[in-house]
Length: 455
Image 1 (cartoon, rainbow, N blue to C red):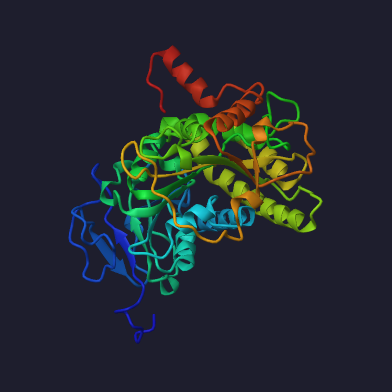
Image 2: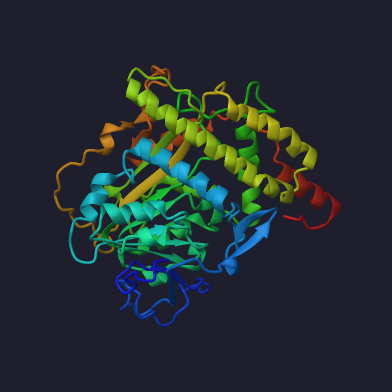
């Protein structure tokens, strides 16, 4: 690092002490140079800052040659360079599809209209890319990203209005209550023990009128029509091996303390009935990205976008599948079964024979002004160039399921909880027969033998 660099005014990379308290991060004295808008909080955090590389081995453990966080055993994905590359590709694919950093850009623009103490919280920030891009897009807002492990950012190019902290959302977020205009949580269910509780904690972090945005992934994927499930291999002719293996993870993850079923239920229900949220501001969506570069639509530019996003998502799932193979062994799946799955999944992902979509369920809403009251009105701003209506198809669950399959869209928005529920019912009723998960077989065998299950 350049010794002449102005370290007094440079951007800091603040990492909080691990959040071991159910009331929030460990209480302590803020460093003298920490530039948090929370400095006056009654429950301050203990932070340390650094400018250059340092030994962070205490935050990781190594398993089968990959790095994993030490704060939360529920989160089963690694934290190292191959994983960071996967997350970056995933992020790019999202931007291609959404044309924005969020599914509701006009709401976020209004919530972050220039004013005093605008702030954004990114829960489970991963590589930090989303938080960094938000900080650059809204330079008047303070952006905080939290994650289970140190964020691999370029410190020299970090905006001064952005910082990162170590935290485990499962321990509570009381130290962030009532502080943010936007709270964002994308793909964090793998490390969340109670997804509905996490959502409620995140909503408490909002100021009145602020917006909470939740995005996660559907482990079972969708067929080409974007409305029905993709059948899985072993129990369906021409079924997907990727769906078969995801089915196994979906059932095995709860035994590791990961609330994937709770996430699915919560996002299928949306935020209409959440106590702190104004139901008139609530919406939900299904965001679709092709798995592989197979879509063709009349618009050539849209075809190129979908195929590029599909190529990235194919790489994303190829990398994620390889990363979770050691987890399958810990779930009690025999090695010979895994050895049979691997070439089938990799062959499926290397071709475009199956036309599948990765579906990300989304939900957002604004916080009420007070208990039982609507959210305060938003300021009127010019419509953004990436108005959600331009990329979204409303009411897909009630549309003709035999519509022209060339009419692909990245985003389907549900404006009511009934629309959201109808779409979920249609998807889930179409899955077809499924094999008994190995984790359930292991539990049944243990119970028959009268011994505790290893899971």
